[in-house]
Amino acid sequence: MSTLEEARDDRATGRSRAGLFFSRPEVGALIGAVAALVDQGHDVRWTHLGTGSPQQVGELNRRISKLGIQNVVKLPGHVSNDEVYRILTSGRHHVFLNTSSSESVSFSMSEALGAGLPVVGTDVVGTHEVLHDGRNGVLLPPNPSASQVAAALLAVWRQPEDTYRAWQRHAVQVCAELFDPDRLYRAFAADLAHI
Image (cartoon, rainbow, N blue to C red):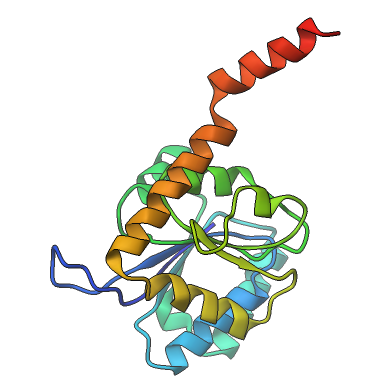
């Protein structure tokens, strides 16, 4: 998982900031998007949470260095579930990104929705069932390019404040409707009763 910050008008503090929370399966488009946004003059900060194999971490570091974005990237490694929750609800992170070509609605995506983070995700498997393009995020085609990812992030970051807040509310609503354990257990029990 990663967090990414970029300039966003914050009326309460007068500072600009926005963020990204990311699920790791395909980071190539994300790395390219971050590099493109930095090249365009956006103030981007990316924190990648979690670990992979030593080979994956080494490759990630090589790609980051090759693009010259190491000064905007932090790789703290594994963090506790409590820390992930704190990050999701900190208010510093403004969008969740999943560029997977096969992973649909990941647990981390449902956590992000529940925390009120709009999502930028690929239209694979069933993602479109929770990601409603233009209502709680941006739906990308499978295997998006770095420029498509960068454009989607900018689309979220540039939403007027009232629209962004509506996206946040819709993210929470979708999570509550689809992932509420009480509702799911009642539906499961009703299904069992019909067997």
